[in-house]
Length: 423
Image (cartoon, rainbow, N blue to C red):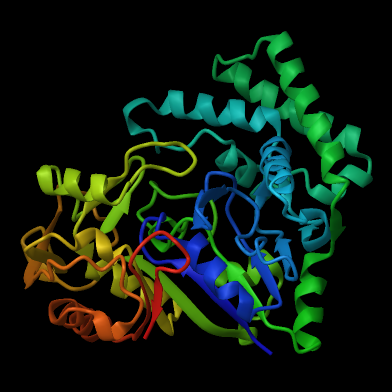
């Protein structure tokens, strides 16, 4: 057996949570392999809306095993809030959710460091969500991190050493926290650590590989998107982990030869949250209209998402990096009313035309080159079959498949799990 990987191909917010929920019935195990609680996966079904931050999107299928892998960074407080909400909603989470021992913990002082680091950067700030994710990954790489398994192994000493390092750094940044405020944060955090012990904490790499050896199917769920990958994204305006397929190997303990299908998710247009370059961003009424029609606001932060036309240069690059075998197009219905649809097929970089994603995509250097296609101007949210697609939409799909040299296997025409059409 091989694992399948599902990940985003743009700057995140592509709709991964919904698709994982749709695909989960076909898998025995769903495993989240990277990222932290800045990743809001939104799911809608049975008239209810759910936002998951750290917990895999397969938890709504009660007979499945879900794993938070070692590549994830976990905030105990936010996890407890998220988990208790699901349990109160009737989800049997403590039976189905497993946590990897090697998952790194976000400490209260990590969040304080995140805010202080952003302030220190001034206008050059990354635009983080302030959840402490970057500093936690920094500690991980510097070999100073505190892992979930450490709560059973000399935890007070390990926590105390990390805490002191962070307080020393905060003092250097002129951001020493109020003692009472820090005490309150830590009390809440320690209570949440005790809550974590109510879940099964496992050797995640063995869980996944044992499942494969037993003939079970595994779906690996990524967070954020390829263009936010710390190695291959729009650096330095990226997240702190590997969001690409290779991240599933290191984030779960899976050998490269165990990778099967790679599902790459993208929107029919493009969005980005936070700072950083965005070549196809629209600053006019069209961009605002896309945001309003697509309800493009962060699932966790509520921040407005920057909106633009689809970027095929970045998509081709993401498909190559990830080894995508099947594409999934989301939010097609958002473009239902547009008489003309634009697609960026190339960049003009310092006056030279290229179809390759460059080392840097500073907005001052990169000019998107567009082609125009006729819109379908037909409401699609009620459609249940590919046979109902208007000709112009089928032409748009055919155009994308030719440009991207990869089949579009699934099309989403609305937020509900039922508004998902397989081709």
